[in-house]
Length: 354
Ligand code: NAD
Image: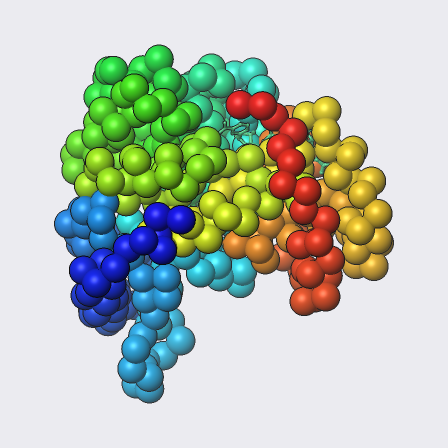
C-alpha cells in the first residue's frame, strides 16, 4: 500500500502538520468557544496543504487542557461526536453525521423529504446534479427556513458534480448553486472517479472553495487507494470526505483506513443497501436480532451501526414516517459485542456495479 512506502520526509511533514494543526485548533477554540468551526480562518491550514502532506489522525490536544471548559475543547478531525451528531472535517467545518439522501426522488418528492427531514431534526441533505432535483431540494430548504424551523447556517447541503461536467467545472458549480438557490454549498463532491479529467474538475472545486462558493470539497466512488491517491497527489486541497457504497455487507474497511491518513471521512451511500436490497439487510439474522434486543427496527440498527463505525449516513426516503424513524437513533447504542457481530457479517460485496 502506498502509505507504507512513504518514508522520512513524509513522517517529518506529518509531524509538522500535527503540531501546526494542534496549535490552530487550540487557537480557534480559544477565540471561538463552542461555535461550529465554519469560520474562514479554519480553512487556511487545509488550503496550504499539498497532496503529499497528511493531516493528523488524532490532532487533539497534546497538552492536557486543564484550564479549558468542555465547550472550549477542540474537536479532533474525523472523530464522531454522537452527542452533537457531528464530525469535524479536515476543512475545519463541522458536518452532521446523519442526513437525508435524495437519490431517485422527483423534484416534488425531494422538496417534501427535505422539508420533513429538517422539521424532524436532520441538518444534512445530500443531492446531486444528476438526480435532477436540486431545485426541489432548494424549495424544501426555503420552506423550512421561511417557517423558522432552521436557518441557512444550521444546515449542511451536499451536491455532486456529474462526470459530463468535468471539463466545465466552474460553470457546473455555479449552475448547482443557481438550481439550489443558495449562495454557497457546504460540500461539493465529484460524483465518480474519471481519470481523464477528474483532476481538472477537482481544481475547479478548489477555485470555488477559494471564492467562498463551496465550504468543503470531496470525492465519491473512488474504490482503490491508488485511485484516491492519484487525485490527492495532483491537487492542493485534501478531500474532506469520500462517499462510497458502504453498508454492513460492504464495510469499506480498507478505504476507510487509507483515507484516515488524510483526515478524510467516509460517507455511506446505500447505507440501508439501496432500493430493492433493503430487505436483504433488514432480514439478516444478526441485524434483526440486535434490532429486537433494542426494540428498534433493522433500519435504525443499521444506521446506528454506521454512526458508531464512523460512517456518515444519508438514508434515502420519500416516506414521511421512514424519514422520522431513521432519525430516531440517538437514544440507544450498540455494545462492543454487537459492533463486533456487525463487523463479522461483512462480505466485502457491493450491491451496485458502478
Ligand atoms: P438507501 O440505502 O438509503 O435505501 C433507500 C431505500 O430504503 C428506499 O427504497 C427507501 O424507501 C428505503 N427505506 C428508507 N428508510 C427506510 C425505513 N426506515 N424502513 C424501510 N425502508 C426504508 O439507498 P439510497 O437512497 O440509494 O442511498 C442513500 C443516499 O446516498 C441517496 O439518496 C443519495 O443521496 C446517495 N447516493 C449516492 C450515490 C453516489 O454514487 N454517490 C449513489 C447512490 C446513492
